[in-house]
Every structure is written in structure tokens, then in C-alpha cells.
Length: 239
View 1 (cartoon, one colour):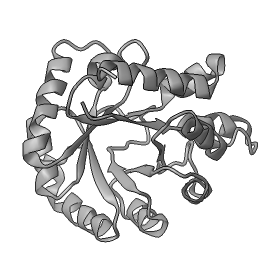
View 2: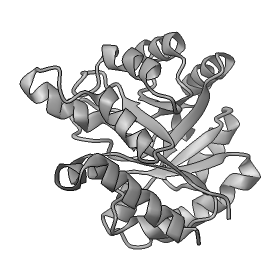
View 3: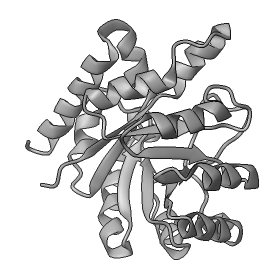
């Protein structure tokens, strides 16, 4: 079975830094540690209110890491302009509300084809891979393919919270991606305890995990938690 990549989201290193307004802990340093421990890429989400990652972090991260940068962003002209200036490896377009604590669900691609299509085209023209963060729903996957996305990242939050039937929905959605010519990623709410079934889904090429890894790093250290997550992923794939 093809090996699976781990993207580590370091947003909440910036959350801790911002709590005191200091220059530490540095999310770039955290990203470098994660990469040294086996992370295959780094994810950051520049939110409209800059609650964790800030503009300066984006440029510093692009310059400071040796692995691909995945830039999570809302579907706004401001974020498209930043992405076009920074040129990350990939952009993952996510829904965003100022009032939410974290991303609460997938993007409604099917309901916003007219506005999302031109954004996807501009990002792809700049050589940026484009991902849609969606719920495991056939209509959303088909809409993502229709507007030219390269990737869908399946929202695993409902699965992580124990919603009935949600794992079956993930399996079914992942199963559609080959025919739609979409690379399949997954993420949100994944932990040591629940990652194995998702990691075992054959079509899922990448997991993006942040909050749990950064939280667990308080107790075990970031290299150790990245190494353990990678080991669980390899075991799930029979490696």
C-alpha cells in the first residue's frame, strides 16, 4: 500500500505565543522540529482575525521549512492575494466564521460554484495545488472536481466526536475520489486513539493533524508525538 503523509498544523503554537504577546514559542521552530521528527508537511491557517497565525508567520514559515507548506484559508480576496504573494505548495480552502472556536464543518462547494471557481483557477495558474475542505458528501466531492480542485480534504470532526455512521461516510467519500481524479486527504479531531481507521482508508494519501499533536506535546514533546503518530499511520497501512 502507498505510504501516507502527515501534515502537522502548528497554529496553536502561535495561540500560546499570542497569549502573552511574546515572540515565543515560535511556530517556525515548532515546524522545523516536527519535520525533523518525520512530518511530511506543515499546515497553517491565517484566519481573518489573526487569532493565532499572523501575516509575518506565513512568510517566515515559507522561508524557514524544507517541506511543503499547506496554507489553510477562507475564500476571500484578501487570502487569495496573500496566497498568490507567498506561493505555498498548496492552499486548502475552508469555511470560516469569526465566532467559531475552530472549523465546524466542511465548505459548501456545491452552493458556491460561481465564486469559488475563479479563485481556484487563479491559485492553480500560480502553480499552487488547491484543496477543498469538505464533509464526506458526494455532492461536495463532485462540485470540487467540477471547479478544478486537485484535492479534497475530508472533514473528520464528526467521526472524531463519535457520530453514528460517520466512518462509513468517510469510506464511501474516499472511494469516489479516484473516479473524480481528486487526491484524498483527511483531518480534524484526529488523535492517537481514533486515527487508525482513517489512516487505513486506502485512498487517503495525507492526514493533517494539529490541535491534538500540539496539546500532547506539552506532556511528551513534539518530536515524540509526531513520531508516534507516524508509527500509528504506518501500522494502519500495514507498514
